[in-house]
Image: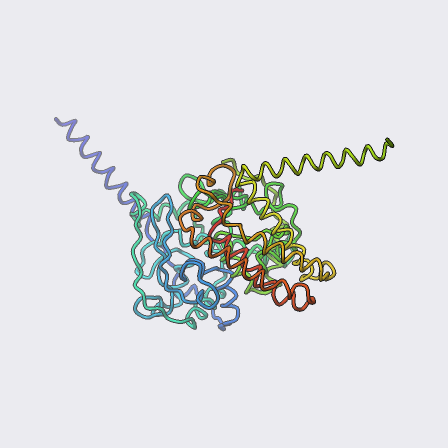
Length: 307
Length: 151
């Protein structure tokens, strides 16, 4: 009897300890006001970040074109193996959008994946990429978003499977895949390649679709940009490394032209969700498209993952 | 018979055979047929695209021919997707069969836009430039919805 009682006590202590460990490990860790720099807002740069970041591809109506891409009322449903994610309203509407959000709250969503109420956001919102962005760029982006038309539309909740529906568990995911580091240029590389890498890894979040994922939904960095099964449907997102499986036979100007016009070197057209991405990139400067191209030519050529 | 003639004849024979084979293949195999058709459209688009980009000189006859090829390919393109041809090595999206009307409308729009641009394509480079974009925008808007990349 005594032994059994001891055993129960030990089990209880272990349960409390692991509960405490889970609680402590999964606490959202936001930035504070002191982390924000002195900054003079630049709306034109904010617009560049908006197009490079592709906000409208998910937060506007499905397949929105032209100025409709600036109406960020949300509503797109992303049907994935984890369940259905419903993209929220990020228009500057005060009741149903993010019109009331402070710059700090916005920065915490983008860099820490933390919502306004302090809880974790799902990484279907690609903050694992956006965390690389410079704070100044994020402040400019927030200011630009405030100039867009408010859309009054209540965001719908996600519909996710267990255990993915437990938000707190995302704290563990973040321990694995979120390092909170801002982009740092590589001094061995040219300014152009560094700019391209910033656009690809930060706002452009290219790897979120072009890199395959491990069992926990984190990006497999060993296969950076080597293509991946599409998150939705049965397609394959192309390998964009300079290899035989990828786009090794494209010149840098071919890559830049495809982002500008939507045409591949053989005058096939980009399609699927890349259509929307390409139309976003047609709005950034030619210098930025050239930078993305220069970076993509500089990365290691990799074969596509087996499927 | 001179050796040269023999060579010529055999080249003719081989190409005739190849043509018959490819015809036979396209008739039995809608997937191949539509892929061939898209390849031709891609080549025609490229011919004009290179003129628009300034990579090759403008050639009125070639531009007009290319635009006509696109129109002709678009005319019957939607018929190349019979029931059951969604299997095998195809990048045709299931949406083509789920939304047949939408797909037909999309190909009809390409047909109409290309038809309306034939005259302009054969006029001069500026007219080609002015009409090319509208026709070309059909490529990606259709591929956005009705194609699934597989590699």
